[in-house]
View 1 (spheres, rainbow, N blue to C red):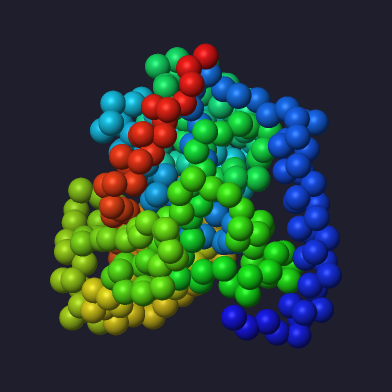
View 2: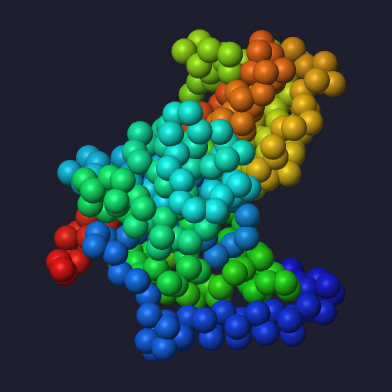
Length: 328
């Protein structure tokens, strides 16, 4: 665990940050502030580490697992970068700039109702009003939104672990490692080679075996078929682009890696100046690229979808806890 001089300099501020965070939690825990309990169970999927850890594929997996167990799930999300005031439902006609890229991807891949907005409780209530058949809500992120009572918390981490172990701004943590949770899931990467999975955590592996043409997603080819190809560029505007690049290297591909800022909006076309014969992008980026005429018709661009693979026992434990929830 490395702590440089800058982290040490900022350490007093991290103590103040931790004190404020503790105070907020205490207000709700003691009942001084009351959390709103919804009429259906709420599962929060989040992380204490700043940056992308793989919440979107985990959320999609969870929705599918709940559906297989007989539930009718719905998802709420903040919708990062979205132009939001009141709650808004994600539909087939929605644009990423309006509802956020991750909620749009979740709605498509999980095939469930998704509602976005700033105030989580109001968003959840709007979701239930629009879809009264929903009997469990999955909150994409929101661990620190204590105003919404929750029945289960799933904390996700990845190979970066806890960084230097300090809170913001001296470290990468929003809350202490000791923070309570019901389940811990660790994103071990595309090849499952991460060896230091925390004790008590469940491993999540992101898998992919094919690529899809952005112009026509029904046009597919095996990812490993590109291992002999030359002139490939891999472009990613996600929280941890190195994980995407590692997936491609694991499949034997040689490419130029181009990392863009997380939630990059593609208003400036990063592909226009590339001489690459083939360009690989993430699904999260694809939901934005397909809305831009100059990009969606570029025949060089292929999408690399990923699917979360998690021990089925986790789904069983989650369902068990949901069934223990007292009914109103």
